Amino acid sequence: MATDSWALAVDEQEAAVKSMGNLQIKEEKVKADTNGVIKTSATAEKTDDEEKEDRAAQSLLNKLIRSNLVDNTNQVEVLQRDPNSPLYSVKSFEELRLPQNLIAQSQSGTGKTAAFVLAMLSRVQPAERYPQCLCLSPTYELALQTGKVIEQMGKFHPELKLAYAVRGNKLERGQKISEHIVIGTPGTVLDWCAKLKFIDPKKIKVFVLDEADVMIATQGHQDQSIRIQRMLPRNCQMLLFSATFEDSVWKFAQKVVPDPNIIKLKREEETLDTIKQYYVLCNNRDEKFQALCNLYGAITIAQAMIFCHTRKTASWLAAELSKEGHQVALLSGEMMVEQRAAVIERFREGKEKVLVTTNVCARGIDVEQVSVVINFDLPVDKDGNPDNETYLHRIGRTGRFGKRGLAVNMVDSKHSMNILNRIQEHFNKKIERLDTDDLDEIEKIAN
Image (tube, rainbow, N blue to C red; front, side, top):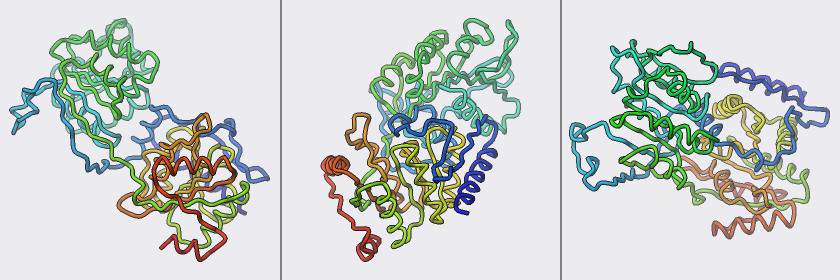
């Protein structure tokens, strides 16, 4: 019956995926064998380092799972090349002398898409039946997501028309398109402007380059974007948005956006101050699982996230927990982004109480009920050294929203003890030993 309940849970997850909407989803059959190990068509041995997500997939996942804006308490930092910039001392919108070129950086979920969609909608003249605004997205899926926002925000503008310059959208050669806003990927947009002449770039009023940090990580997109920008008129408003602002993004932004105003919103810093950290000494995988069961037997855990190093371990652990009667969700890299979003949404809604995952879930997922994070395997990089950033992101899933959190690390060798000691030194935070065979000790940590 345990295996049946696990299979039923998987079926429910897949059913949830089918309701996600218009994007194409490739179904992946998942089932447990007689040993309780879940098999997938993908290689089960991949480490979490190998399946660290490309930025486009992570960005799409963030857009799919976020239903509201991130509450960020950090100050907006406004930078100008010109000390006489209108952003320096204006007191009204009229004094801004809009439009202005802009480079904006802030974390996912802070409203960047709404900002540039509003800018495009404000500049469109519906009576003029040709493309006036051009928006570049790094992938087909991200372009569709942005298009949905344009359609939602423009629904009271019924005469407004939107075209998608993406793969598969083929038009007759020599045709001129009449839609007011074109959103697409750099390669297709470049073809529509230069080779196929569907768009007259000299008539574009607003040029938006979204997800700049994702764009430069994709082969060819950077050069294509610059070529498109050079076709545009000098009075075209240039807007560039990015979730991160490394040197490579800044160099790219300078090539694309002349004389910009720059707005930066610092990322909300994750902290270990509200998280109690412990480690459990074990000899092998089975002892780690028993320690986990002892934890669940002694304290009340609203929801937990458990991180594993490989897909194989994650699949085994999810099946074993399911046999013990836990409601378990499994998340790993072979799943389509839309499938992951459906699994996370079910977990957020409390339909599963335990989320077993590899590194695909380490960043950006806020679930208020998560009270415990367990590192079944400690995070290491490809060279076997401690991955401190991943450790921070993992245990940062608890202790959020002003609540105290609990992180438990499973240590099963001298090597993993060395990793733990180095993590302690890096963060200068003591990680206490926990004896999971002592019920009184476990109960104390919950208080």
